[in-house]
Amino acid sequence: MSEVGCKLTKDMTVLPSMCDGASRLSIPACLDIFQNLATLHADNFDIGPAGMKRRNYFWVITKIRLHIEELPMMMDRIKANTWIQAADRASCERDFSITTEDGKVLAYGRSIWAVISHDTGKLIHMDELYPKLDFNVAPPDDRPFLKIGRKFNEEDPEVSTLGTYTVRSVDIDLGGHMNNVNYVRAMLGCFSSEELSEMNISEVELNYISQTYEGDEIKFKCRKPDEAHSAEDINLEIGAVYEEGKTVFIAALS
Image (cartoon, rainbow, N blue to C red; front, side, top):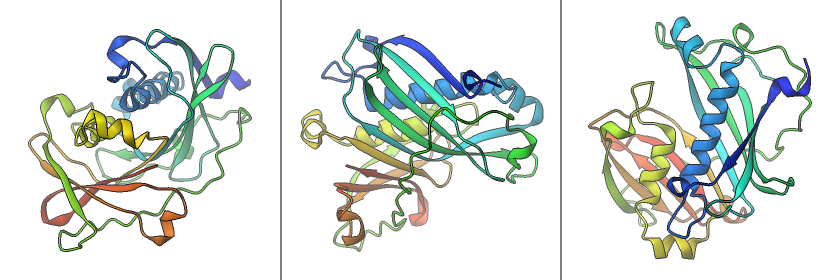
């Protein structure tokens, strides 16, 4: 199959509902675009919502890294792209980019996905589902994902609480749990507009560890990176902690 088979491109306009207070495409909206593209592309191979519902399977995203060169402004015309890399047995990689109409890269992302059976709760081998394509669109991002510690203990003097968030009905997605982008919305909502502007985030790396459901209460805790990560220009590590100190989501902001 041709390159078009493993890549999907959509022409888009950055609409007001997608923008932050500075009239730029917001980070959550950028991740929304990626998620929507992934769904549209997967549907071409019968592994979108309908195909997965028929099999009683569901997709989960385990990691994503978003790198920002420059966020487009409201009403800018952009191209949103996604393509897939060859899969291993239990997971697959999907990449993304947002470019100007003439091809300048504004943002790009790398993500890792898996498929789980509703019936057994076990991982599904990709050979059962994954399309047989010519994976030659672009090489994968060769930077390894970060290894961020999961423990955000309150007794640790380096750890502070940003805020508490109760998972609401508007956060829930098709899988019945909190949508992955809504963790980011809730996390960024712990900061003021002025603080976010000063942070000038150029990269976010997200790890999804467990699921939360409507009515669950999570605490967002943060710490400065340790020596191993400070060399990677990470400014802040954030964990969403559920009951009994269980961390369900981790982010590194640069």
